[in-house]
Structure formats: C-alpha cells, structure tokens
Image (cartoon, rainbow, N blue to C red; front, top):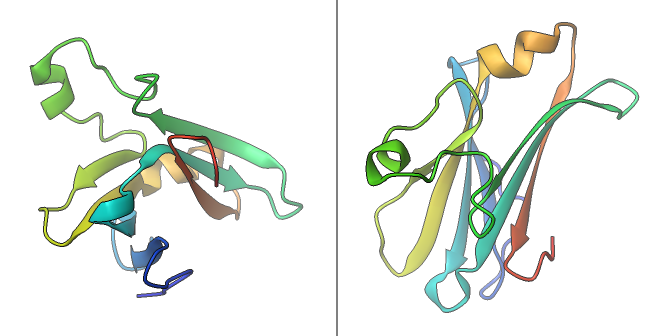
Length: 124
C-alpha cells in the first residue's frame, strides 16, 4: 500500500494491488465524509516519453464512462475498462478504481499508469 497524499482534510490515495500480483490493478481514494466530493476519475496508460497511449474517464455528474440508463446497467459493471467498486461507508468516503490488465495492455509494449481524481469543481 502506497500513500500518496494524506492529512486530516485531504484525500488519501493508495495503490492496493498492481498488475504483478493480480489480473487488475486497484487504486483506492479515501476522503473525509465532510469533503467527499470526488466526481471524475481519469485513467491513462502512458508511453515511456509520457505521451498518452490509452485513456478512460469516469465522470459521475456527466454520466461518462459507464451506462447510466437503468439501475441494472449501473449495477452491472463493464469490467473490460476501468471501473469503480464502492467501499462500505464509515467515517470516511472511499472507492476503489479497478484497472483491468487486459485493457491497460491492449496497446502493447511497456508503459505506466496514471490515475487522476477530480472533485466536483474539476480540481485535481
């Protein structure tokens, strides 16, 4: 587990599992319930020079990156692209972003993954 940024008022981002140990990578973001405002997740597969090879956006307000047409479609995740797995509520708000290795490796070659989280005001 790798903590990227954490204090009492900001988000905590953790890499829970990587492609070396599982068929999909998992990144968890946790915020205090008082500021649970994550709205957009942008997952990018990058070339060695930093250029984007492949990307996928999940935007909850714009209903982008998933099928919001019915409750059934919302409950049935498309696991061929990055998706979110909610974490049970507690004193914090959390969600896991799952990144299927088949999706990330579909462009071939060595690469890295960048996951960016944005709040409802589009701040990183």
